[in-house]
Image (cartoon, rainbow, N blue to C red; front, side, top):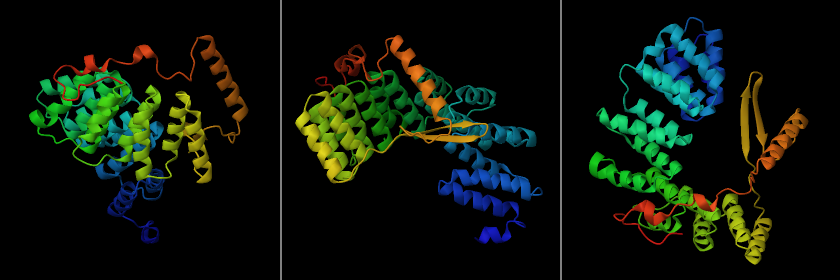
Amino acid sequence: MMFNEIKHNADLVSWNAILTVYIQHNKAEEILSLFKMMLRQSPNNKPDHITLVIVISACGKLASLEMGNQTHLYALKTGLALDPTISNGLIDMYVKCGSLGNARKLFEALDIADVFSWSSLIVGYAQFGQGKEALKLFGEMRDLGVKPSQVTFVGVLTACSHVGLVKEGWHLFKQMETEHGIVPTREHCSCVVDMFSRAGCINEAEAFINQMPFEPDIVVWKTMLSACRTHNNLEVGKRAAQNVLRIDPSNSAAHVLLCNIYASTGNWKDFATVKGLMRQNGIKKVPGRSWIELKDGTHAFLAGDRLHPEREKIYAILDELCSQMSDAGYDPLIHVRDSEVLNCEDSLGGDSILKGQCD
């Protein structure tokens, strides 16, 4: 309200202040609107590096590649792109938008890449399934003498998880504190749980959770529960679900995953019990939401909805894609093939304190 009273006469400090407030409170969409208003209504207030860092961060949070590209071009035109903070912000933005090619080009163009630049790219490659490339970058980073940060190890452990390098990931996790002086955080531990769980090492994941130096949060237990669903581990899955529901009794994902575990193991009595509790307590599965950015705006979709004006065309193409998938022999209900489940004892190696019986 105070800003609206002065916005026609606001200076750059005022614009940056209101933009900062919105980024701190995760109002990314409002930031882009305010930035456009600033350029239109205050032509004498030229955005500085603080302005652009905030706007670039908002583009990354919204995965708005088009707006990010425009902001990048503006930074080049004004010479602000040479600022290291903006360069790093652009790399992080392109990574979050899934444009790893643009992120890599910017990274390669840097005179000197700092730990933030390295970490952003490593995390990006890891999150988008290019784990080997992430680990290769990590090796190059260490060879150049750049000291890794907590964020770097989040990327490295995620990479190991996604490509199934359990032994290497566990070794790197143990090196964090002994060789790099980085005390593992809750996020690092979540990555390790995910790494074991993806590989089918359910017992090892549970043992690791039980020895963590802090109370496991809901993310850790949901990761475990999802893995139990994938690998049909009823006993550990029930314990994981109990812990999720202890933290959040109305959590729909825990109920749904537990139902799926009961169904996959043929335990229909317990399946019906959980379904009955969901109906009794009014717990419904939260529908998935996705969106795509096109020239005329952002189009959002909920799972199973038919609200989009071009829904008939969309579903016709979806049916055609499903038909092609079936013709190719792909069954979308099968998420993991038996041949993809790793042998945990071989993966963990003889020196692991968590080596035990595989799930």
